Length: 490
Image 1 (tube, rainbow, N blue to C red):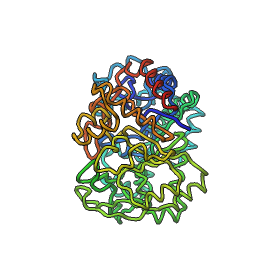
Image 2 (cartoon, one colour):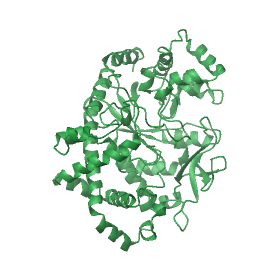
Image 3 (tube, rainbow, N blue to C red):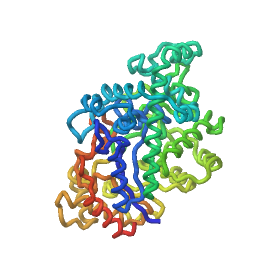
Image 4 (tube, one colour):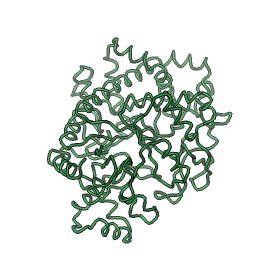
């Protein structure tokens, strides 16, 4: 079935109080997706973010980001007042997220809400059903706050090494803070589930994103050190990244701990099964980030300054995905198979049967093969004009080299070079391609430039901050999206 959808992170919604969240604007966005004839809404990972604000470096692979809790909903529930929320400074620029002000102000309001919250049967049921990850995560965050945000490898030995006596003392002294994080996750889950149900009622599925790796400074690594390539001091031996490529001449040094795949296999991939089950409770379709890492992963010495020096190691391969299929049956998964692909990666993709990704911007780059030109696409793939790691299509067009731009202009028969028109040449090529699913970043439908880029890989600062201006996504835009969608049978 030919379908299409929109890529827009939650934080990019035009909600009140500094960041996009599960607010009325999120519901209105779903209404507009329905009017635009879209069947999918793709978002980025929902986990709580730390230094750098990247959703791919979360404090937990299971927890949700408290920033996404809608404060207006808490007002309606009597846990906050409008006056209280309006009294805090979340920055005047509605087009950018100010994470510094969020960090210092939003938690003050959430604490007020927590102190007024009366625990009920629904809350107790949530805590009981999620205790297997919630308790470790909440304890982790409570201890971390006591250390003023310091990474767990800098904690005192008892807490760092999870000695039972030290953890017991921490639980006793930090019980209120632990309960606060229970409350945050309860509110997050309740609000997200309501929004997710609303989308499904409108016949729109949510495409979520599961990063292949977890952050080192996370409850996952702290609570399960045996699952990772750590030395006796629980420090990484090697870390994740990728070699020099399209995005960076020195490669990408992500710094995530690498899995000890032999142990995962010995346990029947029990931790991964829990992770996947939880992920599919949140989303309808899941994009697996960095699919290549399951075939071979790039191991960089832990003390390296960049990703130039590293080596490829064997990943779990097809056996991992066979185990998943035996446990869950067929799952709606999209494989992020971008980058340099070896024959073994292509074979793994074929054997799993997962749809891979095609990026229109890559089609005109001389550093890429012509596998990104639409006439080469298999029907089962998913096509994008660009992803969260790419510039917007207009930004790309305006900054790319002359040779690449000329190739694109010739291939797409670009006649009008008005900024407003440029992205639609690329959108129409994607929509008209053989791909079963076409996902377009909303910025491209709005003909926005580089100021609306979500992320520039291998850089810190000015990433994950772009927000949609209030009223920009409206019924006129939805009508225009629907017209191109119908034109190409999606």
